[in-house]
Every structure is written in C-alpha cells, then in structure tokens.
Image (cartoon, rainbow, N blue to C red; front, side, top):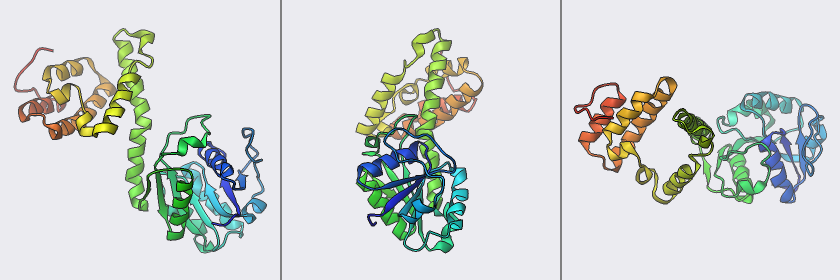
Length: 290
C-alpha cells in the first residue's frame, strides 16, 4: 500500500485496537462512525462526515458487527469516492468478501482480515495482536494487503480461507472462546451446588491453565485426562445421576466427544462401550456402584 491514510470504520474494540496499531506503525488513521463517539485519549477524532477521510485513504477497514457490514458497504458505495485504487476489508470471522457486495462495481479490491483473539472491554493494547492468528480471505490484491497488514502487526500464523470455509472456522472460534466462558460458569455453578459457595470463584482456573499448557505441549489427544479417558464407568454414572436439565445434556454431548478422543488415545473397547451406553441412556453391561 501507499503512505495514504487508513480509514477505519467503527469504534468498537477491534476497530480501536487496529486504529492504535496502525497509528503506532506511523500510519495516519481516519476514524469514521455514523454518529459522534467518545474515544480514549490518543485516538483521532471520530468523523461522521466520511468524505474527506475516504478521499485521503486507499485502505478502508470496516470493523463493525457482522449484521451491519452490508449497510456500511452500501454507504461507502453511495459516496462515489472508492475506485480501483482502493482496498476494502472487513474484520468479520464469519463473512467473506460477499458481505461487501455493494462495492463490487467500484473496482475496489474486497476481502477480510479476522484477528482470532478475544478482545475484552478496555483491552486496546496492540501487543495483544502479536502471535495472534489472522484469517484472510477475498480478492488476490485484498488478501495480499491483509496478509501484509497482519504480518506488520506481528500476527501469526496468517491463514487464507475460502468464504465458505470461514463459517465452519468461525463456529470453531466461538466454541474455543465464547463457550469456554460458558464452561467456566457452568463448572463454578456445579461447585457452588456442591457447597463451595464463593470458593467456586476462579476455582477451576489453575486446572484449565494446566490443561491448555498440556494441549500446547502434547496435543489434544495426549492432553485428555479424567474419568472417560481412564474408563471409570462408575464415576461417569455418578456424575449423570446428579446432573439434570441442560447441565446433563452438556455433560453428555461433551462426553461423547471426549469418548472419541479417549478411543484414539487408547481406551479399551470394553470400557468405551460401557461409557458409550451410559452416554446414550442405555445400561452398561456391568453396574459399578457410584
């Protein structure tokens, strides 16, 4: 890209973090939004009249919620400023460049750059991007620019996916990040039900950190521990006896996945069959006492 400014549309967490990263790299950033917004100290003033910001830019990054990307692209198209010299990319993990379809007639290169990272409220330090995977997609020129941008931020690895492949990938991202939060909340709730009270708060973080470290060091198959991996039929039966409703359904669904991994890791057929029977509501061939 040239030394022209970069227009960032959106003042959410991703937009502000990318704006700061671009600013620290020496690029001029024009921060665009539909309405006036207060931003932290050190950020450029938010512009609601997009004309000058777009005219000064050659790269436009749309960092808005998934459902709003199309309407932002439509507004950019009606500006009649963008042309073949522009690259426009959004930051959605779900959508491909088709979300920018109102801009196809402009001649701009279209694509996407998704930082695979959980950016919580107030976390605007671009250092978070270093070592974060980046998923890129779109036209050849847009993918080239997205890859260069990700690498300049220290993001790694940088992977290119098809638009169709991003949907499955993004479901995986939701499970890995958002549902991890759900699992922690569920685990703490069960500990409270067992009498831990306030002691349940953050109770499981050490074991979760160790599990993640084991996965990083050995891979998921070798890192699996617990009753299903050991073939402890009685322990699984005891858990199922006290769980009800959604908690029981979640335990069973995850247990079936764990059983597949345990089989790969070497769990014997007999124990696997008995645990499978429990997880499908059938009685195992033997009846160990809980």
